[in-house]
Amino acid sequence: MGGWLRDKLPERVDVDRLLDEGRFVDPDGSRVHDTDAYRPHSFVWFHRDLRVEVTVPGRIDVLHRDERLVVVDKPPFLATIPRGQHVAQSVVVRLRHELGLPSLTPAHRLDRVTSGVLVLVTEPRWRGAYQQLFAKRAVRKTYRALAPHRRELALPTTVRNHLRKERGSWQATLVPEGIVNAETHVEREQVLGERAVYRLSPLTGRTHQLRMHLWGLGIPIVGDPLYPEVLDVAIDDFSTPLQLIAHELAFTDPIDGAARTFRSRRELPLDGAGRDEPGASRSAPVG
Image (cartoon, rainbow, N blue to C red):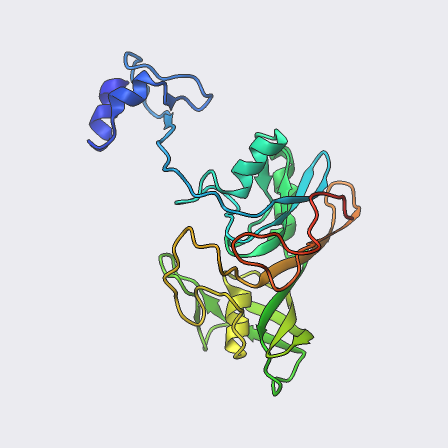
């Protein structure tokens, strides 16, 4: 097996060292040895070296925990799942360790810069049922955002258009001739001088939908590093959080039929540098 690995992997991969350290494993986790026979049509995994990640500040507050679900209040700047430059600094990796749940998996995702309610399942056997709720739009979602106050903007209103996000592109784009695939109901909740808190109820879940829709209304969300323009923000700069909170999720539980409602305790404006917002508490059951 060692000879096949050396032949297939790039020269920068130190196969000898990884084999010696037991870093190559079979799907069942058993160690692969240099002298093992090559097995066609099989998979080999390896534990790669990870760079030292800057710790993302802010707590992951547990809102609810039971046999099937863990519902948390995610801080900004923390990725939902391990991806790219964010591995250890992700909700899944942190909570698997902190809660002792090695199979913990999200039922949906929030952008790294978005805060608020995130639902995870404790074991793979529950994943499909809860993921289908989100796929079938059977979850009622409410977000809150801080953005400029435009007195002349007639609200409430519903934004409907076609959005497209290409792989590798930072921003989504508006397709004027496209069939509607993105819909958000927008209400003004509170005026705070030159800014206002808006209540957003998405009926669809396109990538960057809420950010695009508020930008399109002339009220881009405060702290947005992508809209209206892409900003060069260092990966360890936590000073300017996106002022967007996934405030509430409500659905009928697909397992027992119970009505479930979960609400974030975070308040706008979100503080910078990872300081926790007034009103956030560490854990309590909701719904």
